[in-house]
Length: 532
Ligand code: ACM
Ligand code: ZN
Image 1: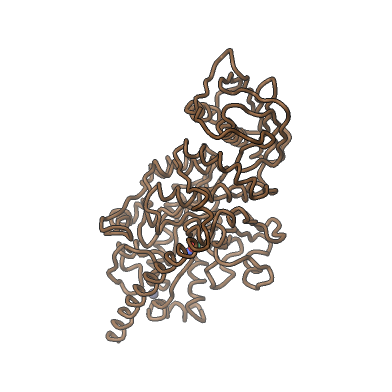
Image 2: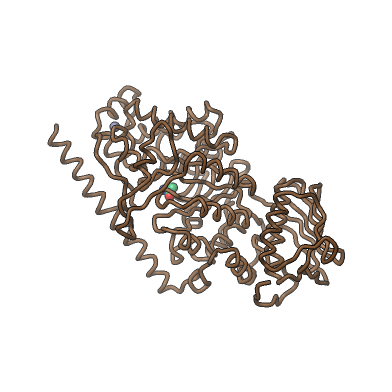
């Protein structure tokens, strides 16, 4: 057993996210040797494999009895579970394998955090939010399959059940599409990055994707794919220039910043491209997901103003402006997805044609959802419409700690109003413009993911100081599991340090988003005016 600080207050379970109900009673159970009684299953095998690395032994005839089974217990939700610890040993029950998996995740953390000596207790745990997601952007930086597995393991430990996989970006196309082989042959590689002169790239084959989905599903995680269109698509335009408005010869983007070349919304071949990609995504993801995310965020429409095909399409369909043209584009994709039996999801930045499809789901990343605003009300508060909450100010883990510190992350309350059944879930996001590797990913995620996982799982959060006390143990546990967290003094920086981080982050946005794109825009406009 790894040596950690002794537990001072035995009345409290050192567990994140904190369970819905937990009562600690007198007595301690020594768990250094466990005697399991139950049927073999993934949840138990995974637990056993992990916990042996903490120095816990398993025996057939000695040690604390660990009884586990799938059976009804005092929880309502299919993800719920019950654990009791007393003189007779540990008793684990759950209505199905999902809950059983979560029970073992809790037990694993508890045994580590309590140094192998569990307080007698009674736990009845279940979530209050159904869809608890982590968005993982592999478009900016490619992460090897092994690291995707590690991110999935981290989600499992935090009882996060959706991996929103952001698979395409200006800086890289990461998913094999047979009909457009250049997307991965060429579009998955950029010549250099923000951090260095070396090329960077990589992609997931169909086999990889199948394997990753299976790995995630085993751990109660749905993988929810995103193909961001019509913006954030420079990697595809670099391979197939005809998909853009002017057949420009672009490179896979090297730096971040919102690019100004979207797909052309006036050519049939672009729509066909989008449908073909969606077909292959559906073929790969199959029943694993009910959602297909098609992005729609941060689309600059200057090119459309200058493009004859786009202007003709607007005229043909009576669209009053380029914003309506984006609505038209998204609507066609939504209809296609709905016809295939899936639910389209879009970012709320699509300020266009709010009735793109009655079944479309909106993911709110910018601003609060406000039912009194006409757009929000139409999008989200009508029957059969739903939304996913991911307001950036609380959930974007690429933000420096000076912008989103641990205290603020823990204060996140996703349910601001009575959203009823319209709120489908909550997601936190790891965008990777400045996350080139797994080590940095951990430094961005942890410890904020611990705080946010609790905000997504536990309706009644504890007071912040109590969370911090539990966290001190959980970060040691995570370290043992291979995830290095940032220390508290970094996660809650002082004002000066926080302001410096904010300025540094902002300066970089200004530099690339502003200057680079301004020059690029001037070039296109200039060339076009010469042509005309
Ligand atoms: C987003 O952050 N552009 C969804
Ligand atoms: Zn066009």
